[in-house]
Length: 424
Image (cartoon, rainbow, N blue to C red; front, side, top):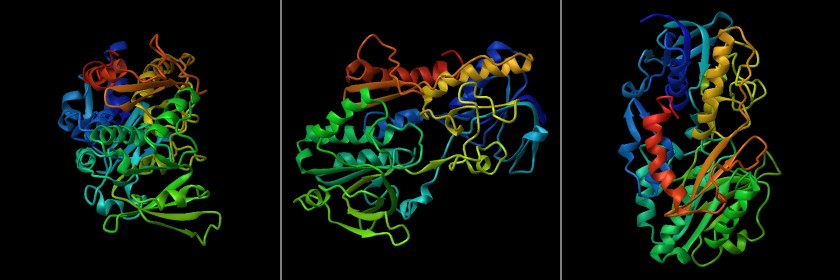
């Protein structure tokens, strides 16, 4: 295996494979190395559907060796250090690889341990997360067997991949319980670190109606800090206690709770809520090997790669590009965003190689398919300005069955057969 490549790609996920495939379609004689330690490749957008009982988890996984683009070299190692001043990358094994150009896209890091008690109880005690291949099927087991009580769904205060996922599963669960005739016995809580249900008002209005229809109690600006599986409690910090919280939680079918002040930060209050079912989304950040590297944005607390948000070129190292969930661009971290970012990186990287000015622009496009019930879905598309960018000649803010088919049937096929191969 050579230790020098024209282009070195860090990450063998959606972003890395899409870029490598598209580069080779433009210029077939490029020497490209892809560093990724994973034996398996996952189609993660379907894990919500797995958690809702309508998608086989085994159809979301393939061998990495089967999806690596031909005419690239797969380096099955883990990056430990970036040395961009020397055009060099070091791996945990001690192996070093040099490059002419670097594409950084290793995805995002799930910080499970930042919620006290979560790792010990995940996958049991009616606590699950669709952010895990291992535990997504348990989400469905919980939902299907639920007989009523307090159901809690959480969303961290950090940026996360697929920002809609924390509440997608909540809507599907509520619809399932409605059809089962037990929704009136369910006290549903959404604990979210965000300040709104969705950042684009046209789509937010639909979701507000949905929250009202399912009688979901929402706690905004709340950060989950601990989960106790044995005692079935979730603890979160919040500045504002909803005036209706006492009344809501003291109703006949609601869980018990207590509120205490945080002595370290007087403005924060800690709320302990008892639950019968809990779907948790962990805080997320850049992988540690990016956080500790010269490539990180020093102003970004999650340690994301510093790029120009339009050209996706690194702000300080002109032969470095980055895309996907690891970048500091103020866009949603979704596969749809990657699909628009990849051609920009390819065009601009080839321009730099030809000593030309970079001209391709990424405008912050992202899409979030949000199921509102079984058989209906709202496809939210938008850009950096939170302006709707609807692809289809319909009002996509209104859930419909065609978008459900797109999410459940068409997009998984496109991913494996077109997107990873650089043709979509």
